[in-house]
Image (cartoon, rainbow, N blue to C red):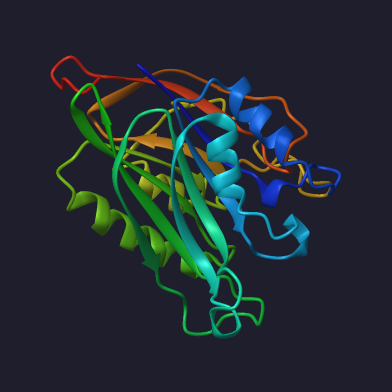
Length: 248
């Protein structure tokens, strides 16, 4: 069995806006996650996170392997300083054999504060068996979510490996997006009730973070972690492979 987490860490900022990456690490520990998909992770990005490589820091702090997929990149003036990156990370207690960041396309017209989107894939090995673990953070633009889900389904359906997929989808379970996606993947929380996963004042009660899995797996239990480490709620699921798929 594996314990899997999805957690939008909001660049390590607590719900009160203060930077506290140690509290982020503690939330991941509290969930006893074997694999964690993290969104909104900074690497040398800006003063908001003290230009820290948050992915590397969390990897070292938790003793987990790490893969990173940047969606915003600034390579700096003539390479005089490290690349400034912002995106998704995967932490794993098991070996990460390979990783790839899949760029997701944008709509033709987008706001000035446009944020590129992507999906990070890590091939993870447990007891000699491999599967793909995907982590994504989708747009706030409805049309873009629809387009990106089409791209995600194209990527995942062409992959012969068993799959787990987590992320911040910015869409509630009742939307056409999640209803469509649920025809291809199983929601770890089943038919519900689905927990609130976003708690910022004024938007409290949103249900936008997910753990999905392919037919190779089943979810035995899913729950949330109570923490002030982010404006998102960490969600966790205990996953096992079905008997006819000898994975872990």
